[in-house]
Length: 219
Image 1 (tube, one colour):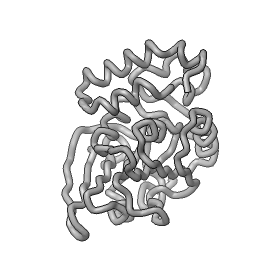
Image 2 (cartoon, helix red, strand yellow):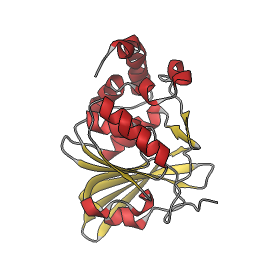
Image 3 (cartoon, helix red, strand yellow):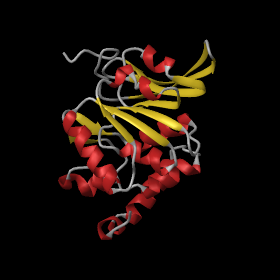
């Protein structure tokens, strides 16, 4: 995966991984994935030199590549084990999917923006990752491959989408930011049995809006 261009950024990835650890991420597998995945390949060439800043960056279509710390937080909350089946809502740049693939998860990801879907598919293949990608409304989940060991939503939802909760395995975890379009609280829902769930409310974050039937209207 590491060519000449990637080696140029190795030191910056190391620094980013250290920064994420310093902010409180404890799962060394998550930190190692941050250290390994070449984020600069997933941003516009004009922004390559900013790729390893711990900040969100625009990727077109009104969307952003999430702040690496935010990606690390969501990934750590999923408690990913190698071989877990993980559903991602909002493929975007492909960065979160790449992190999950790097950790050995079987990744399913849904993106509603066609341009982003095709770009992410191309980039992920170039990196040697083979997640299952779908163009469509992620707020409905991807029932054909349910249930999932983990579901991560990479955009801010007005409420927890009930379709996603239903697509969890027993013991599975849904990580989703919920709130208004200015600020959201990160929520983790764990399915503890066929008909019972536990909900935890965690830190505040700011995401782009989750658009779809069970999210915000396009307007």
